[in-house]
Length: 173
Length: 173
Image (cartoon, rainbow over all chains, first blue to last red; front, side, top):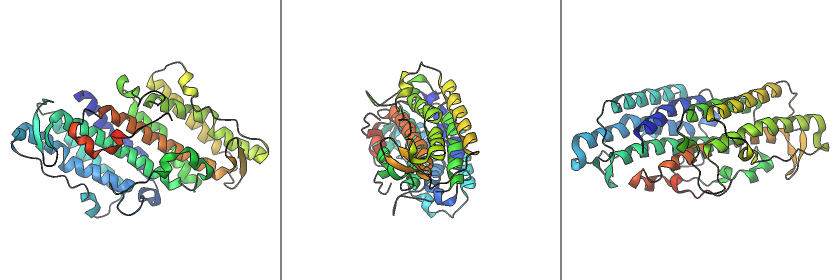
């Protein structure tokens, strides 16, 4: 993996989501696939929380402590316990958290092969952490697009047979 | 479905893809999931071709001919036979085609319940066509995000177990 590619992709995500979601009606933003699944608003909250508490702090932990101190566990559902905000406020929080993360990342001395300790996965490399950060953005962007698409599952009528993603069974994420 | 929602979403897609893809290295843009599957560049070409030949012309056909004249079949792989361009040129073609489609759509007298004839699906309503146009954008946006994410399938190391989308088996689209 190339650090410049990773940073380039991480830089884009807040703007991609702002363009896709700002001003969409609530029924789109808050549509989920059933109990325990996430809507687009939840996913943005999850990304914002991840930037505030997870990715960059773990990179810092590897650089400062190596494998000597395991990462804090990541609370994947923290956003579900936050007070409701508008999507614009939430997107802005994500953009600010991402900018702060990347600003700090640019000051770090990055050795992609440096080792750290994940509380569940065990030994991990800094390069794997950074690749996972990027892949996490992209898979959640895909999840946003698909949960929105399924809002028209019935409205597309017979076209549904051409769009298997409309019928994906999504369980709790 | 609400026409204003559909137009709002359709308006966003070119900018979303421009933000996500412009300037990405070729290995990202041209990575696919194996023979017969599409990379991000192919998917943008498919969307551009759809706007130039498929969605708006079919809406026009319904309004002008009702069920009396079946739509032209859509060539889903037309983009694979086009000469190679830069992603910027292709994204610009998509943006222009989309703008032209939405400009014309805004001049049409839309009755969502109006009927037309799809060459494979049979009788379809204009509202279903417009919903399918939106869902088609969103499912292909999800596809772009996921094919990019899988570029880091191995690079994420042990995080792979948390990201099932990295291991989705994708066959020809």
